[in-house]
Length: 435
Image (cartoon, rainbow, N blue to C red; front, side, top):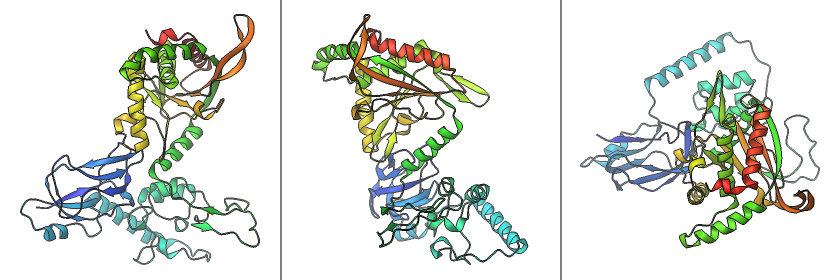
């Protein structure tokens, strides 16, 4: 009996993904553990392994297809001895293996819509919606029940929204960031002889542009950062930190580790300093969870890495108890995976606090947005030569500004200040990082 291969849930939050690339074709034999495809999730591009052996009978979803829902049949696998044509014919016509519950929900949705059509008053005449946004079954807009509820709550007109789901179906992600009254995005705008008058609300800016479709990672970044700024009361605390002693220690350690092929970065030492500061001030190693406050007993540091698909935060787990050489080795491996889009879920999901370092770009100081459900993130800028009081006399020192963003629901200002003080002391007296 042929086996349907379905779109997998490669992370706990994944509802849909992009089938980025097929590594097999119809007629290829596969065994359990063989890599069949690369799938772009809401966090990274991940490899999809076969769990059964057999022969690929057909490909139901072409590579490059976006918005493929978890559970959708993407290919058919024939067992040994089975006819490939018969196995391919056994695939669902629309590629989607819908459970009975899903069919019942669609039936209920259809019934509600029919009742609404019979009872609603005639609406004022309006411009017809683009044909691409309607289905072939009488013009009804295809949208999931959840998307319809969100659209209703936000006062959105579904006819102005382009669906990214299968067959143009409007899904949750399409309506979450949409604004009432916003016009559909244009593919491109060419310069005109007379500039268009700027719209007063939600309109296009008076400049040529090229629209770029958001990838899954960028959609998640937009949603989570919006959630963070709207729901988390941020408090920001900044300290100036002398780096001279840390830079000297780093140079000495790198000389002793040269034979092992290990070269510590300043960021490696800052990861350790943040973890040790959380050990000294455990009231900052927490997260706000509604009616509860989670107090963590391990320091898992999420480190911001700029990847081609967008920002991602691989995690150094138990950083407070790891040596600098181990932190450095793990960080280099994780950063490489992040840039290649090869991180596994356990390598970027979780973390008790975050570190964002923009010093390599010359940024002096900035305020970072908290990564929920965490309650703090440390933002560090560039070290630079500044006038500084040294042993009671004015001199010149290498100074770095560090700003902690704290969730004020979970962390009081005094506790955040103690953490920043502990971090400052550890960096300025760095021998505490090697014991």
